[in-house]
Image (cartoon, rainbow, N blue to C red; front, side, top):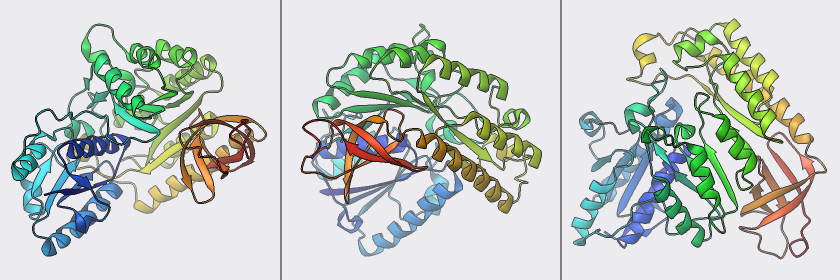
Length: 431
């Protein structure tokens, strides 16, 4: 048992969990391979937040089970949010899967592999400081969620809210910066609730100040925020700390108060709007993205029109829109009929997306002729690709310099709804 392959679907928290597992595998002597057929250990890191994600997982499990028929020695592992506290039903449904691993609970998997390899993983560091990080890196700071939004499966899979200590997080990020990381994204299901479970007044702003002090770290981002925890102190820390990027993901989910109440979202649209104005009045040039679910049980045409009007009025930088899908075991599944027709959900999602595209085209056009600070993350075909401080994707043409990991100034001469494009203006980088 010498090689592994990890397949991941879902959110950035899932990506971080996979990176953590890969780091642990590397430390015990396994080698990553690109082709699943070459892997002695095949790990599927699953997501079930939406039906579309679950469908991808089931398809991948089917592929992997068929692969195992010709590679019976391969160890097949299912981890992530598909795996709940009780895995007996899953084991009957997917008999070819050798092991089921809940989010964050990788130790039994390491025990099993170490036993097969006749080694000990004692001394293996199972944090999120990957062996080979890139320019940007995700760092979970708070696990689980104490909210029980009626549509959401996450609390049933990732458990109650638990914050990591400031020192543990800072130490981990220092390791990452020593390995070349320039930007970290602090992750949590409700990231702005960080520290509340300590009971000593600690909050996200305290962590931001400490992370800001780390040498060689250029940028700090965080997501996903909850409107109930976005304090004025957090807002001011974004304004006052130069390394913290002026971009906030603040899900509203719906633009009608009755729908929000059925979703068990503990705020009104009026509260959300006031918070958004507070953010925009405090932080110059801030951009705010949001998440919206359309077709929630009971959502009428008039209620949807309120959501559409809210999107038009508030002009978010991005809108992540999803059609509601029933999640077994959630409050919504137990209480409400999924009574909005599928085609109606699709129409509503398309209406949101088309409206948002117009908004993004208009807002991105304002960047034409401006100079944007861009952290270059990768190379694709004939372009270097990075993001500006507002999390907008920026393309710049190739030259003889290797720009990966560099902070460069880019003068924007092309814009679209989805990206910006321009030329590097820094002396020494532009050719």
